[in-house]
Amino acid sequence: MKNKLRLLYFILLGLLVILSAFVYSLTKWFKHTFGVTFDLIYYHLHVPLEGTHTNFVSDATRHVLPFVLAFIALFVIYILFEKKILDKMIADFKIKIGKLSLKLNLKTITRIICMALAVCVAFGTFKYMDNTLKIIDFVKATHEQSHIYEDYYVDPDEITITDPEKKKNLIYIYLESMETTYTSREEGGEQEHNYMPHLTEMAK
Image (cartoon, rainbow, N blue to C red; front, side):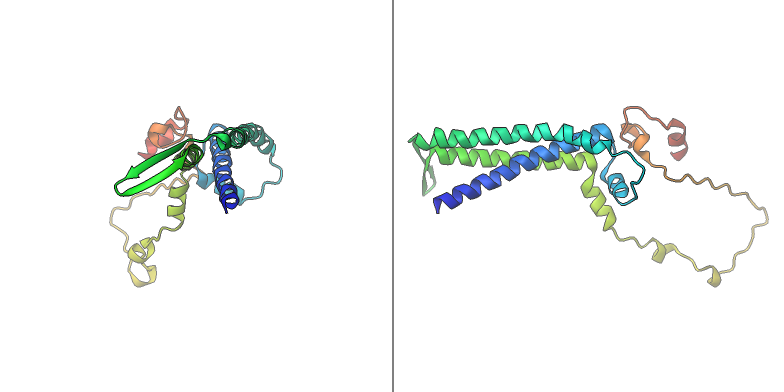
């Protein structure tokens, strides 16, 4: 039973460590390379990529893999440390919480601390990923229900449109595939400098 619990502990701890390292390094690479949010990433994953360069795959691998391998090495060192040193140390601690009394050894305390740190790091890593890529905002937007057509649509067959006495010209300018990523962060974009100052001013 103890061996099964020990194996389960190392599997969970290893997954948290490796996943945190992978997510953090990949998110950092995405931010540095593309500087876009998840909605644009999702869009480009669903359009044909024939004829485009795939150098970004090898570039991401070169950036992410060393970081992940470094954390795997630290995890292996910790396993060896517990097996070679902590298993041989006999040090018990009594912890009393009200009427509850717990007897813990040094190895158990170390495991609790390591697992707590791993959970906190994993939470912080995923929070960093969400703050950078806006994944939760994307999920909310894709599941948002809109009643704009039910509330504001008017069937032209059911109304009478009368021209005003003094007619006015309507100039409608439509820009396709435009978004705010190339504006400055102060204007809601992702860049240090605003690359579309005139369009930004027009949009205000």
